[in-house]
Length: 121
Image (cartoon, rainbow, N blue to C red; front, side):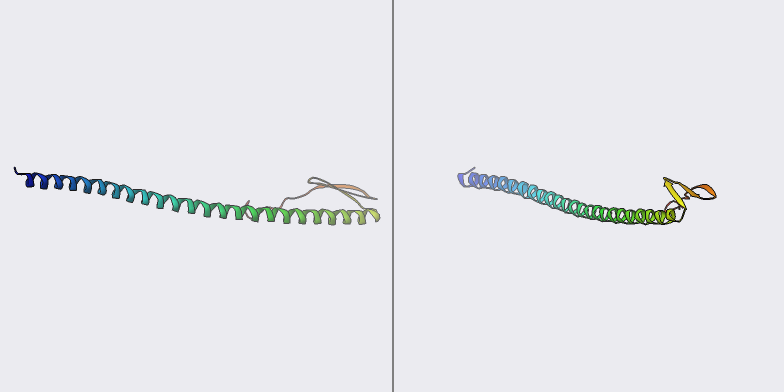
């Protein structure tokens, strides 16, 4: 073999080696980019889900606060009615689900009937 042929073969092998190394890094870079894209999409989806859940929690807290205000208003209304009836000789006491009504003729005790929600039915 002559020197020119040997150099030509050597340059060919070096060129092949460089091409293989570059191809390896190109494939690896493509896989990394795909993995990074998938990771970014997953993180974005998780953030969106967290915002939805935070919104639901905030809505639930608002509903609880509104229900507590309504409950307080109803308790005050019932208390006012009981006091007004007491002035007329009709004493009403409510303990949990038991209602006791007293007047000049005696007393009556009744259990409060629960109303079934649509979810319970």
